[in-house]
Length: 187
Image (cartoon, rainbow, N blue to C red):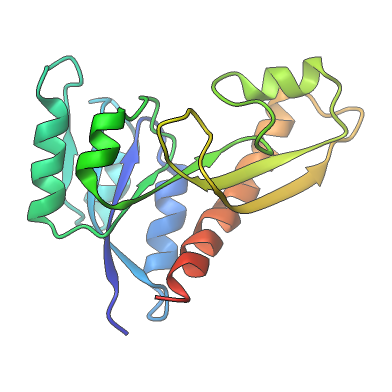
């Protein structure tokens, strides 16, 4: 099996990155992670890239040409798919158009509910009975791309924001790899 080259964008702890790295070490998993990009020089996820000798780029998103720098790295590394795994920066329409790659995002709600930030707070505030996560294609609308995979769980009355977040993250570690397998199954 010839694996597709992947780039993972992160901004924080990199727990989804760690999960994807683990999955990518399986010989039948369809991607190989060739590059990690972060907009946060203090992102702890960089440690996962270092541990597994994956090249990484810390990008200053205040630079006017930062998207061009990312695009050059993506082309240089022959990236076929970009996975946004806790990347806390909105991808521009221009970038989406110029990347000409599949771009996937993991979002901590059952889209189309609760797009954007503060999803766990919204779930609690609205007394939801069920929540979860969604893997979707990235398009020019915030959290509006075609859904690839969703996983859900029922919320217990005693669940607070931290418990809901923890349960959601555990589902994300399954949902993202499953979505990647799903999209490459027919290629």
